[in-house]
Length: 574
Image (cartoon, helix red, strand yellow):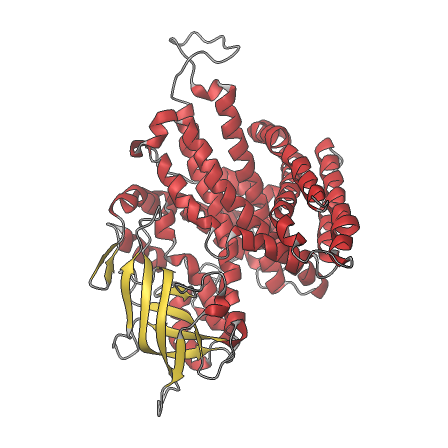
């Protein structure tokens, strides 16, 4: 059925009108020259063309043919390599990388929008370049000058792709259990280490898209202590500068529920020579540069995947005729299009509400990353860091969960036709499921938010963020509801949750039981803020956004009351 196409007018409205990105960028000396709205529109327009014309048409065949493994080599689906070569040669991977590293020096928010569109168009293909920016930042900030000279520009431009090798068969979320060893090579002129071990679930561990693959690998030095503090980070390429191949072998690729166009590899390191990145025992510090970038992009994946599913469902609902809609006065044939039926309208409007609010929150996060990196004022950088710390786990968790449940709801619009492959909607359901798991499961995101970001400082950062957002709201009824919800969440946290966790004899596991509900409650508050901003901005164009806005307040917002009740109930002994 219809392939995804970017709706650039929606992107422009959120970025330029709701978030007023040009004003934010104009305050950043390194990016002020890119604050021109016409320039931002032009970049997005060209990105949309590439995504819609080159990447999106490969999605169906990529799913059906899939990546193929044979004798250690992986062949990607038809058209994937040509599309990737065109992608990096056109400069898209280097969009937000520094000019001195071969990049274009453009705002990170443009890269965020690009990857949202790519994920919507072809999630499997997009997995390949998805880690490039995180790998670039990791090498730039932690690698030696010698490693930078060889690898930084190649990764920045995307000429060489990269992986993040963390997980092992016995060590998933608990990286402290990693056993891969790194032993110094004796008498090696390059001070390299021999890496030995097996890594699993490595996206793009082997493929034919690029001429080299740069593996960033967590491993243990011989004298390292147990646990996460004993981990170091190493760089092992597929090919060395002299053209020889490393002792890194792809043993197989996984047979997966979805993402067939992306090879998920089991990688074996057979004393493969590599270089340490950063300081010994500080591997997680360096690796989390990649992880944090990846978590934002996974949140954007959720938005893109939901948009792709919504586009299919909406197009089908405008054509499929079934029965008369309640109150219909139509004389067209014997049935109305199902888009007129309230049950279908509710599904479509609900997903649209998640997509549009997610874009406000996701693009704002990318703008805050630009601000954190470039703003001259320390207080403004601190505020940007606060936003990114608190909002990134919410975006990753809530919008990947909605990508899966929302895609399933969009499948429902098709009825029985959605359950067969012909219409393509079932692929979105399959592809979306993994985003709730990788780059830190959604449960870990919730624990990270509540136990590492909210509680340690007595909820000061959270209350400050909510107060800052409240100032941005106008005087509408929606703004008043949003402010009230912000106050209620802050009050519950400060007057009930914190005293409970600090009380003598309090159960240490209480916050862990509540973390998922807490994250969801904050997600709903952020959505209310986003829709208040959209509603205040739309003006004469309000009709274009009214159905999704109504969908949010009618069908999504009541969940906040339920989550707050669950949180309060969770503090009461059974």
